[in-house]
Image (cartoon, rainbow, N blue to C red; front, side, top):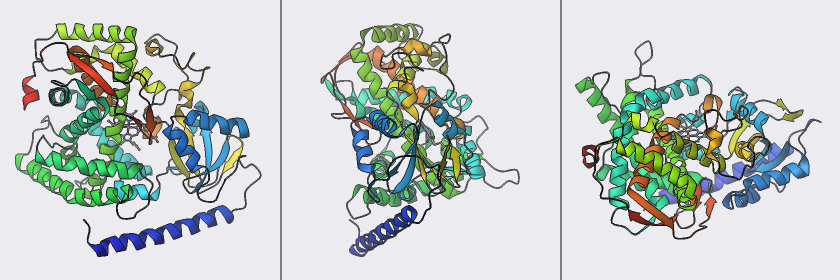
Length: 496
Ligand code: HEM
């Protein structure tokens, strides 16, 4: 527990912040003279606006309906007040293009100030312009395909260990939390170089508190989720700093050869500018490790959980997936680890995953903030205003994807008609497009391969629903009854 003085300090600071926030929002709402070409709609109640109705729609996974109601009432571009900010609400391929390609100096990535208290102010989503380019390039230098290819066996080992610990010998499994443990472990191993053991075990609850804090209402009172997130960051900081120091020493001592398998932290520490100075400061490394963990954990696990549900419900997709995966198994020795070449053969499985991302994208909203007055679609978006983009509404547009509610992986076949640019945006687009796409793909293909070749399963609740907060979370963690297909033989890597 925190000492009393700290709790008191939190309490007073929270109230002061709340007052400052309410006052500045009042000024923002009242002090502006709106131009003529101003989007229709209503700002609703001061401060609260339409936030509660959006949150309710998110929980019920009815965001598209929420947007549609606004469009029917006001037209394609309209205004609302969300999370304390006047907001212009946009959707459609043209809006996706506008948001994803707009100069970062005109339209910032808008994160509520509360988020940077958990993620840190130097995390990628807070950065703009050259700083964003520099830090992103450093992250991508590790997350790019050519580098990640060599880590397939490592990812496979984590998967085998996850199956051994949480699936084999069990009858009923809550798929989603168990898959989240897997995505957490993959990131720990690959990106942070923290192998299984007490250190990793200490990190897991702290990261979980931070993730819950990021997604919670930002009220910083003792014992709120937001407060627990901030406290978790404070506890995590010295642990990550120790890790950075250890890795820096190891790099200096061992003078690792260029092709030595590194982790993301070591890779970031190895990058230097032309003048020899480190490309990223330690503070930037800390904040970006945290943001990568949060960005990569819930998203990939959401996709995998939806795939587990799909294969239990859709016989024809299931048998096609199994056929493809068994072909790959047949070409390998018993217990042999997966390789990059194996993953390249999983073309049908990736089409199924892409179609799942179209129908159930883990991220379906993006926020930005105008840093100057902007003209868009005949309207003015004022400096300081927030822009909310419902990017994935294009996924359900009948003119773009025929019969959009039908699950049809053939849409992603090589020779199928391509949707117009900026219509399939599960990983975003432009300079802020997801840099973790290759890792997400690798984890998804390898995990589904291992699952379908080792188990069959059925859903214990046929229509188990999920809520978005904002990532999809199944009400009972997606309960499945599993049966092993055959005894497993773990690759030598998996038992490391
Ligand atoms: C199925 C899995 C994933 C999906 C659907 C997904 C989706 C997205 C989307 C839509 C964005 C852009 C958001 C915006 O423009 O507002 C994004 C950004 C980002 N993603 Fe992912 N992501 C996934 C996995 C990952 C993984 C595994 C990592 C890390 C290894 C990761 C790291 C990031 C980061 C750091 C950003 C911010 C990029 C920037 O601001 O330049 N993501 N992701």
